Length: 272
Image 1: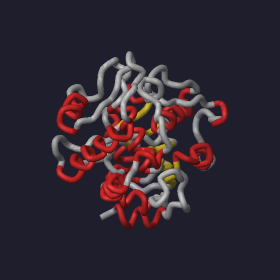
Image 2: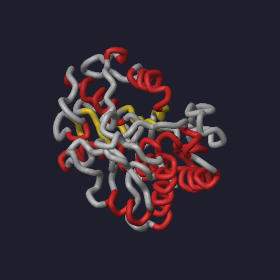
Image 3: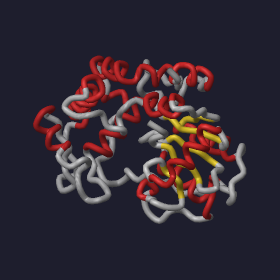
Image 4: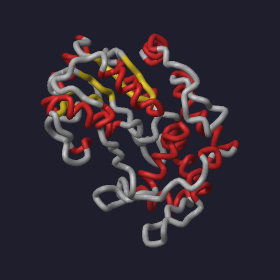
């Protein structure tokens, strides 16, 4: 199994378990900069050098030895499940990807046919019923996670606890898990605890949001998308995420966590 989704700086100053839709572009660019004094030119997910990634075969033995020996500071970042699944919908389902195509080829046409969703078009100003379409997408996301039909669950909407657990189960330990909603504070606390080849001044780091600008904007408050059935589905999919990472299930409009994360609890509950 190894350590899928794990990135490490070439200097081995930092180890990061990627959780999709949780500021991973910004974190990856900060890690790249902390070694090289420049940002990667393009989407950091496309970088095949300058950063060790589990997906790159030569990086695997280096990452494995580091993580199993806990030689470096290891961290990850989480996000409110309500806003994360909404972001997945607007980016991956409604948006045109950076290659100019729809995400995962025929997935969106299949969703239109089988689940009756609409995604609008750039030419039409992305005019469609966002709430109805999102709720239908949520049914699809639940079906993929619960029954692995009509396809395997996608990394962008599978539970954060699932991503985070693989690192623990295979022998890793986190030194920090912080919140996307308190990104500067959390990322600074990580940087304060390590020595990187190039110092990073967070206030000078541009925002890297690779999903911005290629799809419709959310037109309503978060709570408008989640009726009773939708919230039931969200609880079914993300119960552990709400509980472990202290997010407010009762108020979808409150994106901020209700308390701090207990790392010992995370390791105990996700390490089975």
